[in-house]
Image (tube, rainbow, N blue to C red):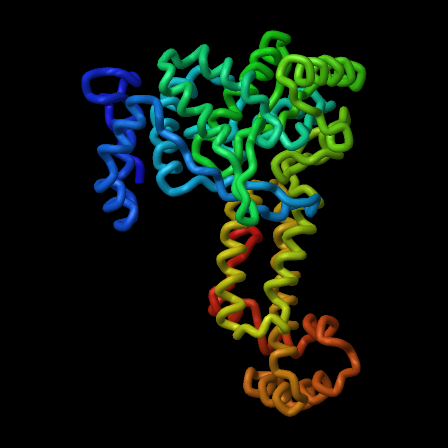
Length: 412
C-alpha cells in the first residue's frame, strides 16, 4: 500500500528529498522481511539516493506468451528494493507529469481505463470517422532510445540525481539464465516506472496529433487515429511513420499496422459493428482465446475434481466478464454461457466413465430409467451427448449455478 503525503513538493529540501521521503512512506506496506532489512540498511540506502550513487540491480528476465500467440513478451522484474525506489519515484513524478499528458491518452494513468479508451473510439466512429489508422509499434518497450527518453525527462526534472537515478534503472542490465547482459535501449516492462516513462516518450506523438486536429485514442503503445476517408488515413499513416522513425527512433510494425474500416480491426480486445450504430463487439481473436482457455480448464485429463475445476473456472470467468462484459452484444455472451455449460456437462459425463456409473448418476438426478439407459447406450461421443435431454435434466442450469459457476451473459 502506498502512503500519500501532501508535503512532497520537490526532490531537494531540508527534509532529505522528495524521492527519499516517498521511499519512507512507501515502506510502510512492505512485507516484514523486506521492511526489517530496509530499516537495517536504510542509512546507507538514503545516503546513496541523496548523493546520486544508488545503483540498481539487473532486472530478472521473464518471458510470458503473448495473448494472440505471436511469440513471447519479455518482462524485466526489478529486485524488491529497486521496485520500492521506482514506486517512490513514480509516486512523485506521476503527480507532476500526468496533468500535462493528452486527454486522448488512457494507458497506465490514474482514473483512466481501457473501457474509457474503447468508448471514446466508439464515439469517433459514431460521429462519422469510419476509417482508422491502426498503428502498431514493433517491440516498443524493448526499443525505446535512452538518449531521446532522457532528453524528455530532463525537460521536466532539473535535479541531476533524479536524472542519474532514472538512467541507472534503464541501464541496470538484464539477468537471463544466470548471465547479466547490458541494456543500451528499452524500458523494461515489469517495473513500476516503465509505464510512466513510456507515456512520456509517446507524449510527443500525442502532441503532434493534437496539433494536426486529429481524433485519436492511445493506450500505451496502441494508437488508433480516426479519419473520414481512406485517402486521409493513408496520408496520416505516412506522416506518422516518418515522425516515429525519424524523431523518436521507433519502428512501425508494417505487418500489424493498417488503414482500414474499424470493424475489420481490433482495439484493446474489442471491435465495432459495421452499422449505423457502431456497437462494441468482442474481437474474434479474443473470443478464440477465451474458448481455448475454457477448453483447457474443462479437460477431464487435467486430473482435478469438479470442485477444483469450477473454482478455477469461476476465477477466470469473473475476471473475463469484468472486462469483456463491456461489449454491447448480449446474444454473444448468452451463447458463450450455453457453450460453457455444455463443456461442464461433458466434463461430468467423462468423469462418470463407466456405463453403470453413468446410469446410476442419471437416475439419481431425476432422469427416467428408460431415458438414462438410452443415453448410456448411445453411440454418440461425450460432446454430442452433453446437450442431450438426459444431461440437461440431470445437470440443469440451476445446479451448475449452485456449484458456483458464474454467468458471462446478461443478468436476469
